[in-house]
Image 1 (tube, each protein chain N blue to C red):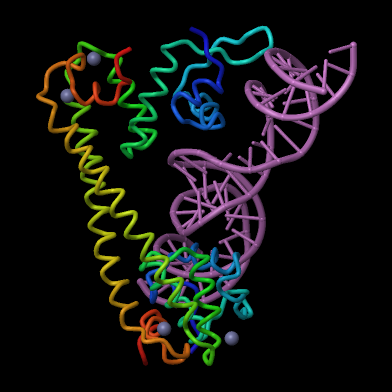
Image 2: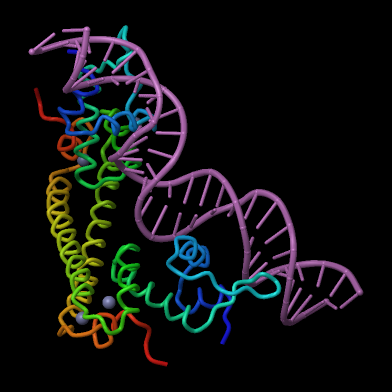
Length: 133
Length: 133
DNA sequence: ATAAACCCTGTAGGCACTACAGGGTCAAGA
DNA sequence: TCTTGACCCTGTAGTGCCTACAGGGTTTAT
Ligand SMILES: [Zn+2]
Ligand SMILES: [Zn+2]
Ligand SMILES: [Zn+2]
Ligand SMILES: [Zn+2]
């Protein structure tokens, strides 16, 4: 029931430097230490780290994760705030997709216009350069 | 024909701190200075900064911009490398869109599953928490 | 004369890690 | 038993790309 940092790292596919980083910023509690000063984690810490990983995989920021963790501890509270955070994040993700889609379209148009040849005639360079004066 | 940092900043919609940053990392040449030690830019510097801005707007990294600038100076060289960099960047953009699309789908599914109520029954929290043991 | 708006240098902060340097500890094989 | 390698520790600095001061000087307008 006691895990080393390497074990919880492997179990959650999290770099151990990252685990220590989460501890440093207060996202994970400071664990007990063994006689050798090694960190010793219990199941609860492993669960918490899993929660963090999963949230990160869904693109939540660490501050959002911190808020979600806090909210998830308050089991009898209603979940409106959880929903709000999640929806706000989804909106952000959707906006990023739109931005990248526009950008990709423009980039593709620029690239397609190049027929090869020398830089002096390259349409890509031309497209990047400032307009004629 | 001589511009202050504020003027080229405004003309290219670039923060003046950013202009100084570009100078520091060697993306922009160190400009001449006036008697008051103010930076004094010519049209060439303004053009170069415009090129950087436009490339950044298309999502190129500063290292890619640096390479593109170097290539664009060699007017008689062929543009294959320019194309390669641009296509590599487009591939990256497309991969990001795909990743975000998958993520957005998953996030939406998680959010849609929540019917409100208390945190103990919230499906979002449940989806984030580690699987039952 | 004074205030606002501009400019300077240098440094530190932000995000979310990642990579050392320079040590200590432990398990397994020769 | 010795040694190799895998693991662990702390603390600091680096990444990309800015952004934000602090603590000054200068210019312009009123
Ligand atoms: Zn509550
Ligand atoms: Zn070309
Ligand atoms: Zn050449
Ligand atoms: Zn809910």
